Length: 290
Image (cartoon, rainbow, N blue to C red; front, top):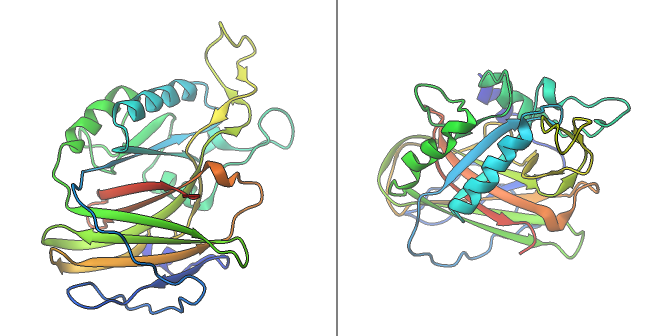
């Protein structure tokens, strides 16, 4: 029920489309006008690799969260172009105040929905590919590296490609994701396409009393901030049942930027997950501005 509700809701500022292409490709049932965002040709690919998504639940009122962000920074350096991160500001620690240090509001409905569904109670905590670690989706910072290393050496089952194109007519962006299935698979698979922003400056609580006696980092730079989901909280169904190797699927969205965002700091993250298990099968990231 949670996913059916969100499939029914599409933001008015988005135009979605699915390119219907010839067999052996998967044909989408939602044939939407692609006049504003014509589907481009994707380059050929080689040497596919397994990639991993870390979804951190955080908040600017969480004093332990700067140390969690430092762990993520180190992990991203250890796994370049194979690990990607999104910071989901949700729950009590992310609430915005009417005045004072914490007036910034990074909460979005999709982030709150995820935090509620996965029963997030404290921060920082993260999911690694939404795969259970010690029988739990939510993983403490001390176990993030182990959870990543358990996954990242797997053979990839999909290869994702993302193309971003700015429209000269209105400065919106056409975002295209192609999902290439590398082997025969069975299951129900959804595609999610989200926008994150780096280097967003606003105060952050900290437990570093030595360097910040006030308990607040006033010029803190928030990274990987979850700004928007183009596909709703639970994504768009792209395949059900048996899926064959060499099948592919293309999904297009048109994004109109929020004027408060910094386009040069925006990234697109696309990922496919199995709705039966919640596990993310593959993920890819690219800058909004190529």
